[in-house]
Image: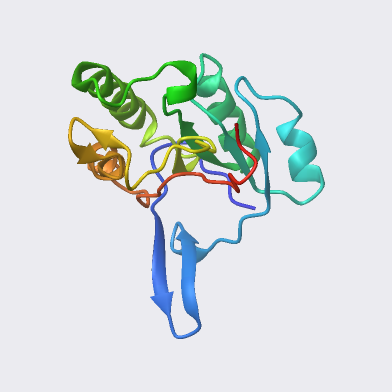
Length: 171
């Protein structure tokens, strides 16, 4: 277990002779983790006791700074979620001002937390359902530009994409 309380830990995905490998602080890192919903639930201490090392949060929330600090103290890495608005909840990707606000908020979250030692990577969106990332447009541009727009300030972290799921039965 690593415990690192100050500054960022470089995380990268590199190609090796055996395939692709996630490295954290220059060492191979195998994710053994769980997901927690907005605001979190469960115990990170218990996660460590059962051999876990990573947690995924759905979205940045008021509790996020404290959760990151606790994770760092316990040697737990975190995939920090960046929420995406959903059309089924009224989010309008055709409105450039609404989209610009969403991009600005996500970018601000990345800038705020990118150097925290517990941050492993970002999860863009949380299972955005039928939000088709290749055909949904942002003022005429595919929503797929979100990772480039938001993650251009990532620094020591991999630029990850959307957290997806099977959407065949999505409403």
